[in-house]
Picture 1 (cartoon, rainbow, N blue to C red):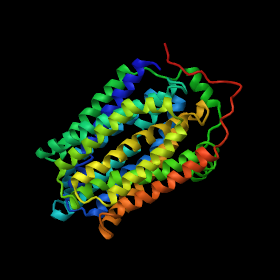
Picture 2 (picture 1 turned 45 degrees about the vertical axis):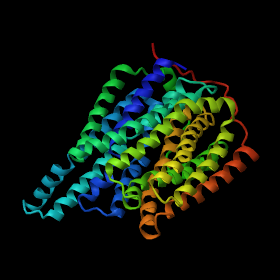
Picture 3 (picture 1 turned 180 degrees about the vertical axis):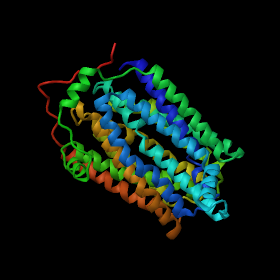
Length: 430
């Protein structure tokens, strides 16, 4: 591994995640302050993922053709624009309502326009939200198969550290208004943009990009996704990514509403609980994944971490109070940290080099699709069935993932990827 470049990617992902997690605990409170109900909050949360579903694979493919660095710049610039829109949602929404009604907008009309701006801000960020996909592709460029899981674990650690600081900071900053964390996140995105522009070297040489561009690549369509799901090695991993992602995203996207209505927490307290999750994730991804990947096969880790996560979600379904919730969050965060890293690592080893960016983008789209479904399903189950329902749903999903992973990865694995006669050389310019 090239340590200086891995450190740069670590900082980029950390700052990006810090900005994202700043607004994570307050977004439901932000929307409900303008009259949005649980269903509309779920749709707002889903809008980011729906836009990312379209944008991530395109950005991943473009990074294969034009290089990782320029696409990272475009992606972070979009994140900056999205956070600025989020911060200015109130005055911008009121101005649009006034312009639309000729200055006679009611309070309800103004709130509707403000919520519309909130939707637009999340969709702008989602459409350009390929930061993590391209960062993962960058890691695959500068690592080999023996240490790729460790390198991708750094991205997981950056996620965890971002969650350690971000939610707590967002909760504290929200004391001065919900727009303040959004502007803080915009400032972090601006700093990230400067960091990538001036400090990050390109990982793909022009020769490598030319050779990658000459290789056949599948299109991003429903048919292409179906073909990928039926492809040896890649298909089972994408299947696991979908069902694991749906279960974990149900937990992530439902938790702020769950914390507010079932546990009675406010935005600051919710931020502190998410900080606790970030600490657990950072510990396992920063210090545990590399060691585990050296000692155990990735397929073994996928199976057993799926089972551990199923037990954690079962505990979530029967949680009576905050303290029990903190206990059951431990296996969820630890198993989730390992799963997210080793599934991505296994995907990069299941395709040829010219397919890495596109495959990771497709994986991100699959995960983004789960984030479209999960807040809608989770919010509806929470409202209609009760606090136990999202946890029970996630438990069933992870039970299926455990069974499927055991059968397809351990009991009857697909053949290994055959070598190519001509290999694409990947390196760093200069």
